[in-house]
Length: 394
Image (cartoon, rainbow, N blue to C red; front, top):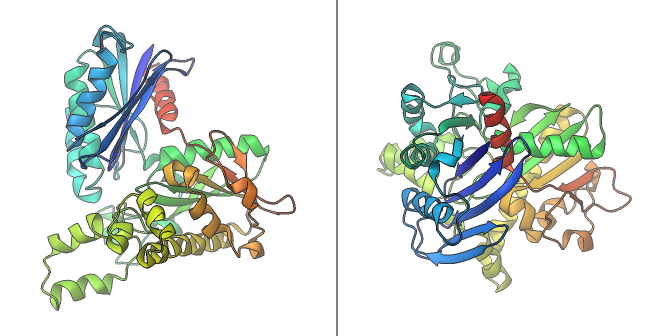
């Protein structure tokens, strides 16, 4: 069975075509920097590699480019869309409705649309991926895998907010958690790699969107993102944690509308708000040139991660390993160094030489004497989505 997986993120589209259940990758690729005039399109099969710089103004254009490559007479890997029996989609917010992988129908699509306001940078892109895939692959089952599902094990003392009870019981306002497919994938890899029957692990997913999860014995027990994917860590354009009094001050005293504040916190804040750049590679390059704003932004980013490491080690009463994953976590030598410096109290001691790597497999980067493992584990949300899609169909 051929399953196409589309991971339509806030500023990128990852895709892989799998032969299942063998988990054989037929082709893979990435469309990144969507919305910029120098967006990059990458495509790789067993016989062809393509890297292009194009103007990709939105996700619809990016997805259409992916399908064109799959069907291309010279470099494509399928002759007809009918060869693909299922398309697995990452969907960020499942709200209180979806706690497991689901076959998409009209009702499911309508619910995903209803949740746009809770994940405005993600659910619209996820929905667009489904709509385009339905048109391009009319005979395939469309399957939604929800980021929130892995975090259903978070206990009530962690997911409930200290507001009147009716907002949980009547409106389902609670911490949901995100990037669950990634956190699940890398934590299972770590537990298997470390050979632990009982484990206390912190997974650190760092991309344009960022999150951390406390995972005890394979179960998510706390997470930095909450009701929507804005809280916690400093992200590409999202603020992360902020005193809610600031929102009231902006509206009541400075004349901002709620829509303007929401746009600012979602699209104009984070690393972009601090530096004018949303891509960490640009920020690191500027910091090396002496840009003080970029240098401070990197320090702030790492500081926030450190705070959550300490918090999660406390609630688990110990720590076996921390895991860096996703685009920044796997590739940013600088962020890993800043995070792991002066953390020996928690047994975290970075080996600078080992850290000087962009890992393509599970890699340890701690000193030999360190009590806590520091792992780089490349995430593969796509294979996890393919597995869950295949299991659902069969």
